[in-house]
Image (cartoon, rainbow, N blue to C red; front, side):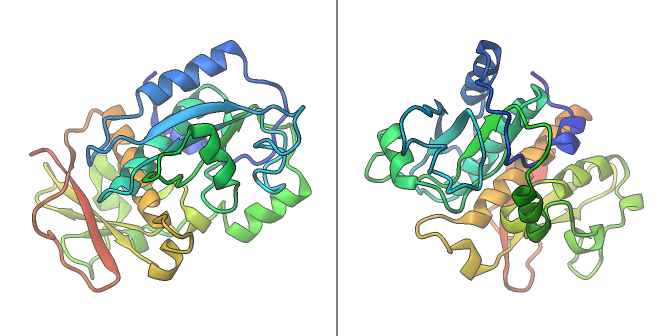
Length: 286
């Protein structure tokens, strides 16, 4: 299934579900998306599984596993990875690919990297000693109306707000914002990144355009909150956000038939002030 920019625009975080079980077609869609989640930009191999909720057994994932934040989800997409360099970026890239496929099928999802029963999920995945579970997502048909609690959560997290272009995208240097009107064919691609979900909606990604307008490169950085990104021991939350940004950029570029691929350059292409951390570059030379 080819994912369009419209799917990125349509994606919303869903915390309240109808409770209806996934159909065989839904299950096939998710399992196919899991198989096609890679290859990842940094060549690591996170693994994923679709776990159906068994509501007849108290204590199972979905009943207490998300501590009441997620309501009536019939299933969860869960995953694990070894914490190799940039593996959290790859995990974010891969899981967001699965989530976009679910969105295209009319299913609701929600990135969930904070409070959930990691120990319980680890048992379901037969977690290896060197593996961690960075994040999971419920998946199912959205309820007709959001609960009051969900509306409060969305409001407190600023889920509907996005930073303006002049805080996210730059032209060759860090003190020159890239206006949307100057981005040309790449404006839709950058907007797809801007619309991406991120932990607590912090939107830590930054992109710098370099080269000429006809064949530009885009360099991805994290404006990292070091305390926040390590708030969960063993998990780099904002590296997941970088992976989400990379997936959105790539999906949108492919949809618009624009050239390029992700690679990490040997040297930082546009050194900036701390806490900016270079991740990777989109270039047609890749």
